[in-house]
Structures are given as structure tokens and as C-alpha cells.
Length: 299
Image (cartoon, rainbow, N blue to C red; front, side, top):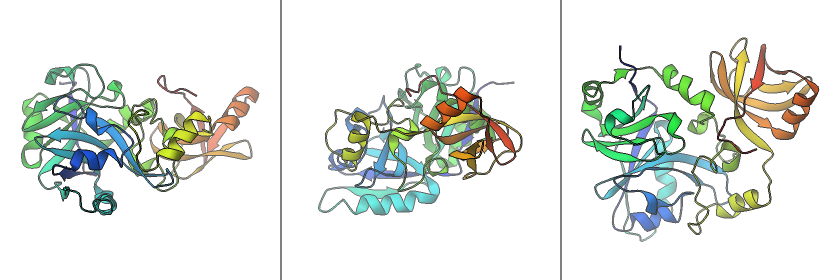
């Protein structure tokens, strides 16, 4: 049986940014450098409030002359509306392409290599009338693809991939500490550096101004990160998102997305250090938690 699997995301949509002014338009709004995006490179980026709080994150690929944003399907209307507020007189178009294209995750032994992808995060190649690329955040996160929606499943099956479920992809994502949009990051509240955007390549520190840059930069250079999203091993019933994480009788964080045995939690770093030093157990509801710092994380 094949080790190479694919998941056609039901909860992802595609938004196209078109026109001669598209690159300059995006460059002034997103946390990463749009100039890096091309036929052989994809990026991950975020769109923030003017105060530097999280609104949306997305993967960006270049297909012909358009930039396609792989974003949360349920929130793509909000993303389109918010981007539209900054169009002014720019030569930029915004179009929902979710009926034309589908986003997919590609994972398992040799998945990326089978499509001619290197082990470099963000490396992209044309594939199946669309594009395939290595997760720009972390190569261990597997590959992703944007494909014609009508034929996406058939294209991937012919390439040797077997259909998988969301839980299969989450079983890869969660131990790596990779957040999944607003499932793990609170809209208008979250700071990017709490969620690994620095280490995971979602911020370019040399690109110049963008919406929300001031707080993001100040947080980094003043060392103001007090909380971090991190994997937690769960012993007991899976706590729902929002469940307080306790160290003894003190709240030290909250649960985010999780499946049986593994999840993500936003934890206060000082309290985690104190509890770990004293051997105080972490709990969420009826479950006991063990925080795990990802190999890529710096905190």
C-alpha cells in the first residue's frame, strides 16, 4: 500500500489577486516578501490589523500572472473584503477562485520527492495544471498543491497518492507545532511571534513597511513574547478548544486544536518554566498534558 497520501481540504479556499499592481499591493499589506513568490517558490504570510494583531494567514503561489492565496474557506469573504478596503485606485482585482481550484496536502514517505520537489521549504514546481510545493513553514510538514478542482483527486491518484482524512493530516501537523489558521490563532488578538511565524518563515524582517509591522517588530526586538503555541501530549479525554490549561490551581494557558493524544496549547512561558521546575502537572479538563517544545522553536 502506498505511503503517499493526499487530503483535499474542504475548509480551504482560493482567492486570486490579479492585475499589474498586484505585487506592490500585497507587498504593503502582508508580513512576508511577495517578491519571493514565483513559479519555483511559494510563501506563507499573514494579514494583520493596523495594531499588529492576527486577521488571516495564507499560502501564496504564482500561477501565470496571478497570485493565488490558499486561505480558510469560511473566512475568505472577510479576507477579500478587508483586502478590498486597501485597493483604492490600484490596478488590482480580487476574485474568489474556490470553484475552479482546490488546495491539497501531500504527505507520507517520499511524497514531495515523487513530484520533483526538493527538501527545501517553499520549493514549488508545476503539477497537474496547477502547482505543488513544499510547506513553506517547515519541510517536515510535507507538500501542498493547488489543482483544478474538478480533476484534483484523479490527478493525485494517478500520481500515486492515496486519499486521506483530516485526522491523518492533523496527526502530522500537531506534533510539529504548526497552527491551522483561526483554529489555533485568535482573530484580532494573536501576535504572530506567539505562533512561530518568525522561525517558520512567515515574516520577512527586511521587506519594508506593511500593515501591522510596527508592533510585530517591537515585539521581536524588545523580547516581549510571553506566550507560545506549543504541542502538548494528551493523557485522557481530548479537551475542547478554549479549555483552560492549569498548573495546579493556576491557569497557565488554553487548548487550541487537538485530536486523540496530541494537540496545541497557547502557554505562558514563565508559568510553564515554573511548573516544570517544581514538577507541577499540567491539566486541561480531565486530561493531563505534557508540553513539548518543537525542534525548530526558539524560546
